[in-house]
Length: 217
Image 1 (tube, rainbow, N blue to C red):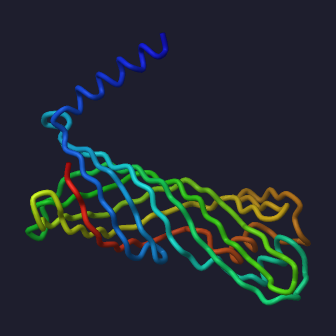
Image 2 (cartoon, rainbow, N blue to C red; image 1 turned 180 degrees about the vertical axis):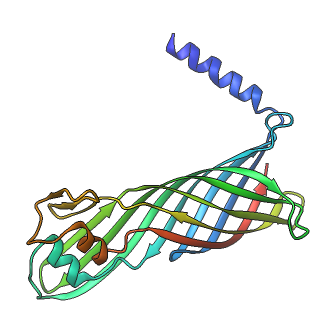
């Protein structure tokens, strides 16, 4: 029975989207660091309905923070080894898009939607026999403007500018966790969430300026 209802639902969705417009976009540029984003958009699936929907995934390289402070706050007071650090985040995003007519642009949209970030700060201490990750995975939101400029029948040059915002989120590394509400797990010394948050550059406010291409189907 469940399979039957799933098949009926898929048929209804397929019929509803008949005649809809689908596009795929690839963007690269600055998003709190060097990043890229892939997304798909569906629009004009209902007569007179002004909104389009976009689902995307992104990846960004980030400065993870201070290796010295991170080691003290999440592990111990050891200082041996040469520190190396790497930071990055993956994010999932869902946007509502509303068409705009500004500055003479014929295909521009205002977008706003929800975000989910998966941040990792990796710290290694070469010669000190120590390496660990600090992670966080906050929900957030973002907004901005995207514009397409036709280059051919089914391809456009795309520009996007906006921002993403993430509230404070739990930071977990090694066997230690610090939470925004003050709760801790295996806290080191008298360190607090504020100390951990200052040591690690988890995503908070990220301006976005990216360019790329959009393909129509």
